[in-house]
Image 1: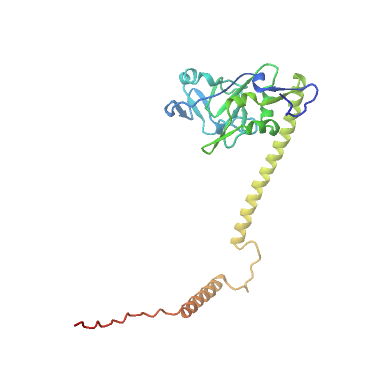
Image 2: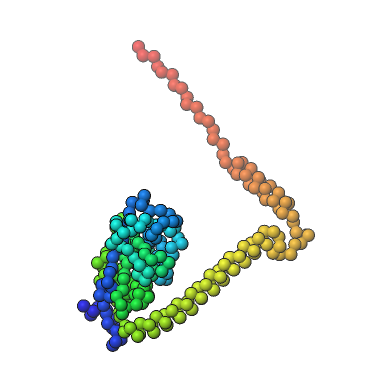
Length: 263
């Protein structure tokens, strides 16, 4: 039922992700003893390796598993270059990355779902669409909160509605997207450089200020040592005045009463 979805151009159609992919599957996490940090046979991806710009960041705390674990225990979630990954446990949700070709095979944990597109539908387009608010929001709305986490089911990941343009238009659309995103990234890089320059300038100004180099020095100005001595003297005077204003507490003694002798 597409009645609740946006109206598409005449040549486009709505389809579920499961109609566009040969496989949509989440992973699993082996025992800690089966994983190694920094080196190993097969790269094992976690949510922190995914990004919100479509790229994969395996430089962040890379984890590996053995080929045996990969082919036996985790054979259900073997990933290949070109697969589209999305995290289904957050926060934050909405991280989407394409598996690069730096390794022939990868694997994923249970907080990630992998989409393998059928021929005729671009994985890059799927990645871009899953990063689009209008496509992602209905999926996020299905998430359930459990113990401080938000979880999207694999079934919801399979049924998410995807707008599908014709093949020729997919390539044109991707070309335009690539150009626009490249421009945005250039702007972001320039802003980042500007922020770093501003931070360095701020530190330089503060350093100059506290080295007495920001304003001209006047020999007739009161030396800081005299100013400090005067401030201390005023503080001492205030303290003494406060002590004089505080009334001293008189000690009170209980008067003993003589008990009358009883007859």
